[in-house]
Image (cartoon, rainbow, N blue to C red; front, side, top):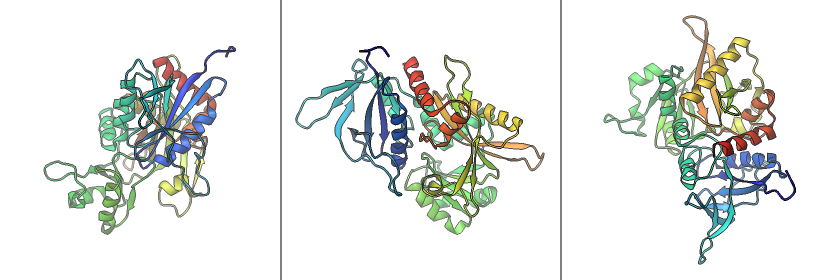
Length: 372
C-alpha cells in the first residue's frame, strides 16, 4: 500500500442474540487477528445478547478456562439506513446521531438466529453495504433445517428421514404427541431432536428411549419454536468447505475432513465441539480418490442449490447402502458462516488445500468488495 493511502475499513460484526453468541465472539477474534493491519482498518462491532450494537475493543474474545466470551457493553452504534451513508452512527442519549466512520465492507461473523439466518443480511442490503457470505435467501434457507432438506431433496441430494412437528391442522407445534406411532416406527431409535433454526449442536438431544422424547422436545423448543426429529444416519462424519471462485465460475471445494469421536462419546455435541477433548480431526480425511471427488461434487451442488455466496461448509454422513454395498452420501446440513477460529474445520480444510488462514480471510473480504 502506498504511503498515505487509506486502508479498507472492515466492520467485523459478532456476538448477537442467538444461543451461539459465544462461538461467534471466538470466531470474530480470530478473523480480526488475521486481517493485515497495513491493508485493513478493523472496526469491531459487537451485538449484545439483548440485540444492542456497540463498538467493542476486540479483546477477550476467546474461551479461557472454560469461560465463554460475551459482548456486554460499549459505545452504542447503529448502521446508517440510507445506502448513501455507508457507515455507522453513534447513539448517545440526549445527543443527535453523529457519523462515526465510513465502512467499506462488513464481515458478519454471526452464527445462528438473528445473524446467520438472513436477518442481518437483509439489514446490510438495505444499508447498501457489501458483506461477506451468502445473501438473504441462502442464509435463511440454510439456517432452517426443514427447508434445507426440501431444497436439497429437490436437487437430487440425499437427506436422512425426518419429521417436523406439526399438529393435525398442519401448524407448527412443540407437542411431543405430534410425533405419531407411525412416525416412531418409521424413524426408529436413536433419533436426534433438534431446533430447526440453530447450530453448534445447541438444543439437540440424542434419544435412545422414547420415554426421554418429551424432555428432548422441550430442550429443542427452548431454542426454537420449530422442532425437527431426525432418524440416525449410520456413517462417518465428513465435512467439506466451499469457496466462491476468484473471478467467477464454479465454486471451489476443499479437501474433505473427518470427525472421529473418542470411545464412549455418543455424538458430536456442544461440549465435544468446544469444551472437551472428545474428538480427533483428520484433515484431510482418509478417503479414496473416488470418495473425495464425490464429497466435493455434492458439496458444490448443495452450495449452488441453496444459492450460497462466498463460502459454506457442507456436513455429511458417509456410509454404505445396505442394498447395494455402494457408498451412501447423506448431507446433514449446510453452514453459511461456519466456525472461523484457526482450529475450526473450515479454515483447517482450506489450509490443507493450500489456502492459509490470512489468505482465506483476505479472499473473502476481497470477494465481498468485488460484488459490492
